[in-house]
Image (cartoon, rainbow, N blue to C red; front, side, top):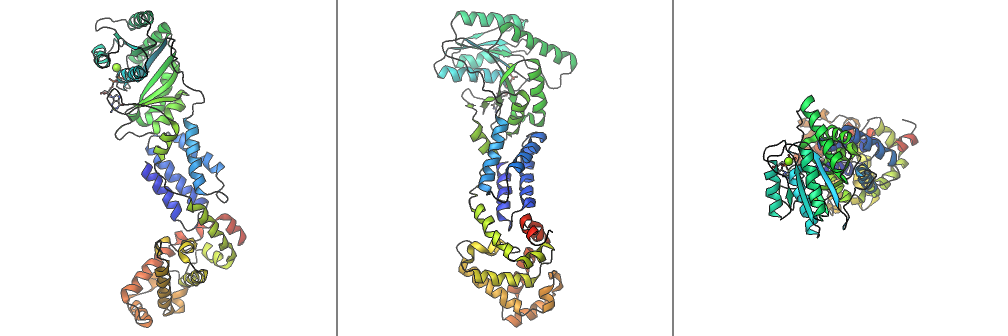
Length: 442
Ligand code: GDP
Ligand code: MG
């Protein structure tokens, strides 16, 4: 995902002129990447609109745009209210809910272990009487960390177990009591699902937890939102732990979880082991989601350097009409040579791509441009004014080569380069609107 967004951003950096269209394309690409990362469509659209409203393309650099995108995502990840956190010296009861297989049992012991390492006295209660071996599974993990556990393999009333376990650990002065519950299966329809939700509510009512944690599998993708919502509607979810963020996990459903539960994500699970639980931090997460965007500071410079272009209204007029010809290119070359140190300027001109010049090779590029112009001097007026380079056949290319004293392949290379730059897409469509206005309300 990060790679894709980084590519989108670097694409926008490559564009000769950045206007709304280019910017939109960049945003669309980012949106596609987010969507594929399981961020819900509505959020993506929301974000796009918010960014568009905030970013004034003509006055703000992309370095800022990047910050805007990050800020937007951070805002979306902010549930608006902090999660309940257990307080030392007080007994807190935390109940864990979620779909079957989402990682509740694993997370219970991870969560307990996290606090144990900080000097707490946690204990776990297995209130999952639905799944065979649920108790043994939790016990195995708890034993490893020497965390007391309550439950058994034979009791069938989850409410009774939960209440008894919580009572016992309260008496034993445990300051953090974690209740693991049975999972609901996604496919379970009607009766089973309803009765399991009912059971979950009863456990919650009987144990009166300080916090209900919704555990969500990050691999649930686009379905995450509705699942989270269903849980939130049944029980007072206070925070979310997203599991399985290791491997190829996509982070987008973290956004869904927050939006659906209006609760913060407090931890993410990053593996099957006890210590693979990370405190969730919005900013680093968003940065990771967006990937390394690279240094965009040059962008501002670019936009500003493009602005002198509006002193060339005639040229802009032609370009905006899609009339790009070798003659215009020739004139651009003349401009470039006039402008001096061309490294910075070259790629700002319409029709000139940054590929035509390599960093630190300004001299070489200048020489190359002079060669181009020499070859162009051997072209006919018709060829120079045509916006279609296909017109040139092999024998003509040979004549140009001989006329300019340049090798044939060099002429061909130039035509290839130039025709790429003359691609209509590159032209007027990309002109900033304020320039278009200047040249007559196009
Ligand atoms: P429950 O049904 O909700 O209690 O889910 P479990 O705790 O039994 O976990 C289901 C599976 O997911 C187990 O194989 C766990 O080892 C695995 N699992 C849980 N959390 C993570 C995680 O953060 N990363 C990975 N890779 N696997 C996890
Ligand atoms: Mg379980």
